[in-house]
Image (tube, rainbow, N blue to C red; front, side):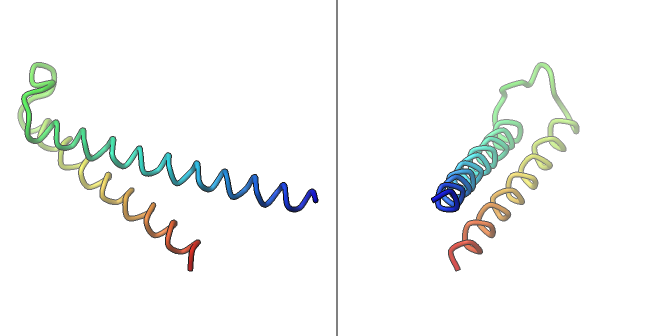
Length: 77
């Protein structure tokens, strides 16, 4: 009985972790698009720094998506 509750709790924690990873990945990708393709935050971050931040956020967002998908599919296999 206790083992079943522990397994259920671990499964729920894994699901929450996966949801959090997906949300954060989207956050990084959205901010990358904002920095690269819009005028939002143009008065505070501009020039080369803006371009670098946008590119780095995009790369990190893609990396987070890759990790989340790899984790998701490795559990199901």
